[in-house]
Amino acid sequence: MAQYEKKPAKFYEFANKVGCIKLGEMDFQLCDHVQKIKGTYYATAFYEGDVKPDGKDAHGIYYKKISNADLAFLPEDLLKQAQIKFDDMGQTDDMVARLLKTITELNLQEYTREVA
Image (cartoon, rainbow, N blue to C red; front, side):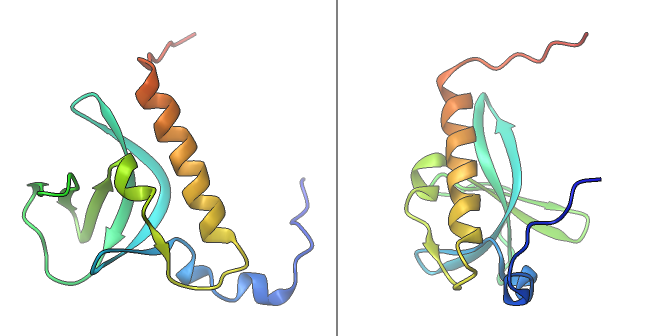
């Protein structure tokens, strides 16, 4: 079984803050998931505050309530503008980089899922 990286205890103390970003006046918490909507890939995030109606807003963000979760699907151009909210030893920076790399590459090519 693989071992965890040897990091200072502080590295793991703020797990609930990893992925927290600000876009304009709104706060989001990213997760490592992308979603394809109408042929384009978006980064998935949770948000709190006023519940947005399902659908796309003027900034290109899609909103959807699924069970008790208020989800936002962030387009590539907005994700590039994300401001990291907390010093989490680079974990959110890494997450944003992963998501940007993924959605950029998927949006450049037609992704097809092949089953063996």
